[in-house]
Length: 330
Image (cartoon, rainbow, N blue to C red; front, side, top):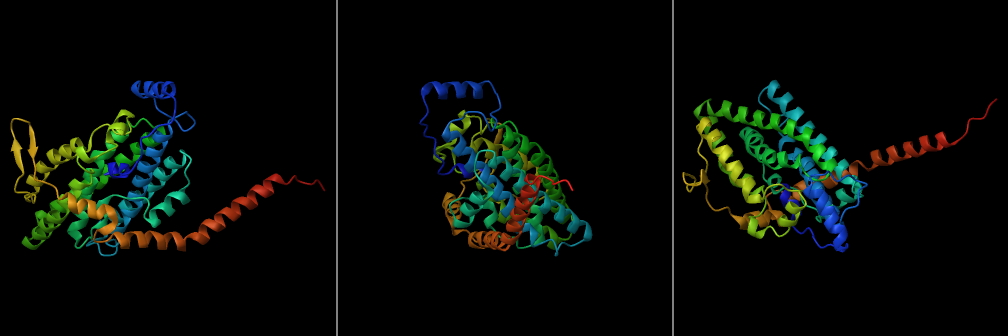
């Protein structure tokens, strides 16, 4: 998912070999790199790109589910979904804050998003057509996110790793919530089970795409792994997700939409069919079902929130000026 943020990231370094070797020695010793520590420019650039993309994904990810809050079937579902969407907003704020420690502002990151220069996870460019989609997102999308995010708790960059600890705890709740929705539908009426199956059919392949391009096409993944920003390759994480999800689908009594899916006894894993990478790249390049709508929604929110940001800055300046003015004794 967040490996998609490495697409186009540079790995060229201009520092001396001695500096790079000393930095790599710290990485190899599993030392955490902190904001004020010396670091290669390419390491900083890669982190800004990945953390920024991760933060954008959390914020844009509120949109597909947010429009179902008022349409949730019960008060319990409404409250749970509202809490989940609120969590995602919080995750975005943690991550923007982590990226800011690298010297980039939230304003810069947001402007890159709405101009199209920055990306977010391709999964959020698909529509949520039924209530079952909310279950599928929780089960599959958040399940894939957890598979990506747990290794990030051991990322070499300290602020990113620490932010991910809380994020992972909350995403685990989201995944269980989604699975429980799917289970309720799968054990309900025939129409409800059909709705759950339809959602699974539509979200399965985009969920596998969340892990990013295949390892052979992931140009900067090796450097990111060497720096221990990533701990596993895209294909390794994708395989872990498939192996964990197939038994869950069997428990639901639903069928994964992949005729090639089969247990490989010799390898101890599931084999799965070919992913439509043409679709993946089309969505990444902005041609998905809802790319334009998602970016337009973020631009609208950014523009309409300008007065709040301006008022907060004016208030901060006023407080600073007041604090700098000495009190005059009467």
